[in-house]
Length: 330
Image (tube, rainbow, N blue to C red):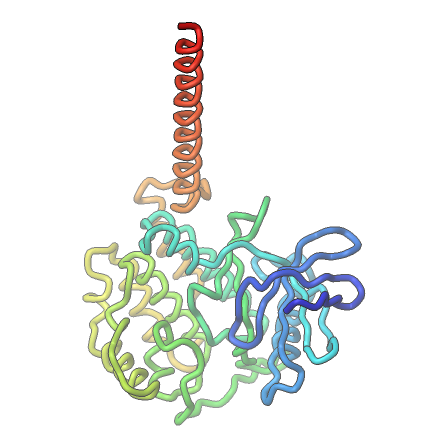
């Protein structure tokens, strides 16, 4: 997009940095403050506009202020042929960081993420909302002083699961088409059952095992159509016992998945129990909450390596200069 697009007379559009479940995401600048922001664009004429819907969920979640781990919406409106949403610019996604760390995360890093991820979804649920698209791409790290905070993003598929005033739960339904990402969605979602709080939490369980194992048993299955692929993933997910999926890892991961799968449609999950499972394991392993993640160590290591090779190069240049000097003197 070469044209200079100004948004709400306050923001300048920069380079494209990604795509969400709907629309594209660009880096932008607040013209007044120089602050960097994220700008999400969607064609206003699109058949199923989602951005206004997503902006509404962010506003519901941020009502009251002081919220940790949910980005702020700085502007929403229609600009020319686009629906535009401007929000806080965050750091890389957990999927990006997982790739950066050679597609495996340590137990310590996974546990530090687990507690925050459960806490974020607990907060989202407390606002009568379910996310319905749990995947590592939808959890981002913060930047600067908030670099250790996990954020949950992309509410394009979110839904209210109860009336915020009366807390009347949505009715149980079957025959629903799959909403979300097949790799991480719950077994009940595969079976066409309306999603509720339990499904977001089951999805987190699969993400954690993906981080520890490096992949999930239902990845890379061959199929001719999307429907056939979904059905093969569903079959493999249902026939892989939790104990097999979590084999070689602490029992808490199997306990987490067994608990989330045992919840009934309207049940309020015991978030404290789930966070405690992982916190106690963290303490028992002798870890400390220092927010030194695998990628923190890898960046330090790479910087040292770069500095080391830089110094090596400098020494070689000095040596060559000395040798040249010796030749000239001779």
